[in-house]
Image (cartoon, rainbow, N blue to C red; front, side, top):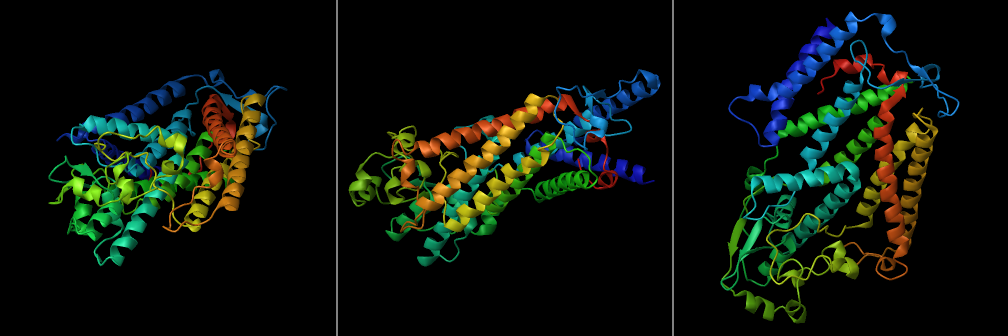
Length: 479
């Protein structure tokens, strides 16, 4: 009875989640039944494999292969020191497809839903924005800390704009307004220049100088522009909770947790933190607000002082927000971003605003360290070869050492700035002291890529207990 309930529950969840997935991708038609094809294909594949396996003689089924002397250290998780090589059917146990599906579906849901991009340019099509989001999706899958850092910087920028706006008497300004402006939601239209996107701090400058009035847009109107789906975020929480619960259950029952599952748990940790930072950021907004001004841009720049006459990297109003982005304090990196002869057609997603207080820096550092530390759980995992186990050890130790070294240098060189922005430690901008940052950062990236490569390669031969089910986990709703 329980098995029948679980199957029915999973069917309806598969139906709803499949339709939601295609709806998120913008591929829904008036016939939602068509989007059950992926789920139906997988279910049919399962059924065919089960029928084939049941019709065979049990004696012909390949048994787990025993580790050789050159294989990795045997661990209690590997039952009798055995590995199951190749593809494993999932009729009466968890198979290879079950393991892959649980990890990939969780990764896709967590990362795709949580990627909040800035507004596209007016001339860009839906597919331009889709491909951009796809690039950020793959980057977040390989280096989730990059998305975490970006979301933390954007939250800090929105928080600073909220403080400044309310100090200037604009009590209606919220975090949502700050996010909306910083993502290119407001276009300034001067009489002598083409329209261009401005940030929240630039809008604050224009409002203080009486060049424009702050748009009278409510938080509810901004939310109405957002494509955020409460069902999508709720389903993300359900799927992530199920995955973490069954992983914890595997550890309690002394069942093997594959490196790919462990990596997915780390992604979930970073995704939850990113979601908290982007809780108030609108999702997939495509239409900005045009804010006209009667003051010519030439007049605004002439009154802005000497800094307003210099070259700019994003918009002509960069002088109103000096050192807003991390690359502003790094001359070698800044040259890659400009200067430009005209304003950018859109505010790019890789212009990471500087972080805020030391508390926020410490919070992001703790989450990043937890993401790196979680991989130590598979320190004694039975990898297919000794070389892969050594590579896993190297990746774990290298990532942890680089983070610890960087954290000590940041703590030693940290001092707050007057405008409450993150102070980029001076050693990062001076040669050869900058090597103390670039070398550990490069090694950390190498460690992260090693982790992903070994996690994928280990799937060809996993311990027998990797395919054992956590029985109660099947009763929980999931994809």
